[in-house]
Length: 281
Image (cartoon, rainbow, N blue to C red; front, side):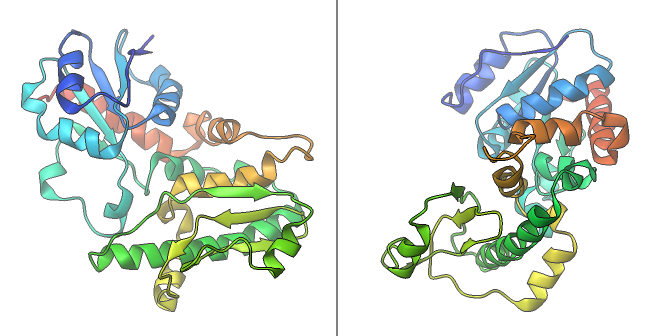
């Protein structure tokens, strides 16, 4: 069985390369701990008896290690999220047999789009709320995409806060939740009593309706998957709900039936091909 090395997101690229070179086992280099969790579910379908998963703390670091892969002495395969490349094309410099890209924006997207089981967990009133919140999330994401396409600073790592504060409506009325010069993109309470807040964003402008429509048509693949799962967990992991499903449990529900998720099957096939090819240079 493969195992995760004693890795650290605080290691720099030189230290990661040195650490990998201390091993003789094939390694799948991933961005973070969530990716390792998913790889553990995939590994039973990958024909290796011994190997390592190694998380390097982020996509930027992973791609830098990839650019220096000629320094690696061990068979290393790279598993990377497409991120904004899903809206354009993967650069030629990153098109190689040793790097496996997700089909959607991230591995979380591949999990979500490949199953209907997660959506089925929502009760009707939760589904209505989720759909309403989702439209706001898509508008926010479309705005950030436009910022990216214009070469401006963009942020897609906003997080979502679940509130059940009895004084929430009063705080909204008094505008106490706003910061000067910033706009909360979502601030509403729905029938479930759950209020969702996206981190405030300066200089927000409504995005192109056409872009919003395009993203809406394929949101499970295109909107950052971590945000989608955060929103789902606000409902499905609420402490007043029976049964509750944590975000990690939702990942398992979507990903672990590997043979029933075409995007998980694709990752298995791509990782097998890359490991077999043994391309490290």
